Image 1 (cartoon, rainbow, N blue to C red):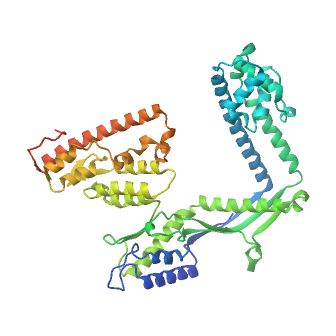
Image 2: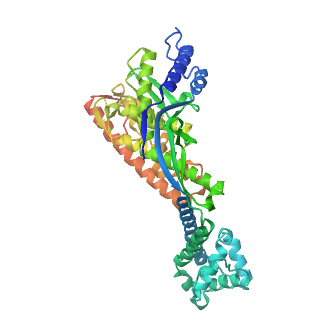
Image 3: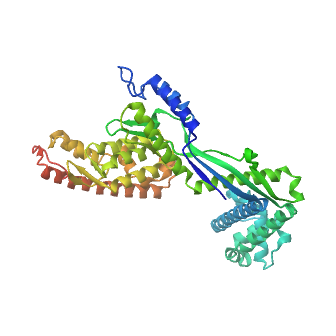
Length: 500
């Protein structure tokens, strides 16, 4: 199988991209190169639309050849079906066991029908499960010590038999509940798996189909969703930052002709039995499989990493020419916190005003981003920050939710009465304090599902949070005393600090 990477996009595409960007930046002048009045990306939102018009930047291409067969698709379908069925049955079995144990504690009298209806009313999700009828049939057979085979996979336990089974499980007549709790579902799943595989084999008999696919995958960046949140220009260090833009596969194509002038086809049939030749659906399935494998092959060859490296290199040169300055680097960041950490940790130390940046970045990200794993991202960012040295005016401190307030107090190397009052009221928690310990609260808390938390869960959260705050405040007090001593700070002696 041959494959080849291009270094970035084709020459024509690069020229089009550069010309487009030059026209955009020359017309709107976001870096104040041509106009006396300073304009920023944020101040001129029309520029955002103009940059979005650049569209897609292709910065890496992969050419390859793959082979796919209909049998692969059948095998994958069989595997997926079995995995799904096993998952459904496993969940159903556990839920039904727990339900029977809970239901057995009810005080009920009456017929099998009334007991079954009570069970159905209390556990409608179980009773309405698509597999419940066949599962109950299997359970009933195993309790009776009967064998279960392929001829029984379509049989359901319903009506009076289902009513009697639930009643016996509820009352534990003849130890049926005990027998049920010892039952495994391995045979049930295995028999269904064999029946499903046999059916697939029958459906696709005499349909062998093998195709070679030759094509290319293009990767890069999509600027169509670009906004002022995605861009930062660091004039101090001559760095360009793109935030929230990540390399992605922009297109994957297998055309009828891969190399027309040489007669090399994009798709070539190696095997095509009569059962497949007259069914275009099968051909389309295998062609799509070829395309999927081509993309996977490109990913395994690190096309996204290559796209990122090429884009950073090409845009670095472009912005250097455009701004008439030596741009030190162009960087793409996963999100705002990733950008913040990369900037703050350029010297591997978090110090002074950078402590403010940590809190503001956390709050900004929490309020402006809608990621499902938002709290995990915040916790990861804080963990990364804590793994690096933190200091105030060269004095090492332990980074926590009080660190920015500690620097604010020590900025003038003096602790006055107002700051003492602030220190003595730090037990009042803010949003920032909560976000610093987001890993404690969990997704339900931050997804506005607090009402679904149990009292026990709330108590555990409160206890852990308060313990973390107490530890953080203790570190704050220790660091404050050390800073006062080392920096020889003035302290208003008319008041008493709670820390001391």
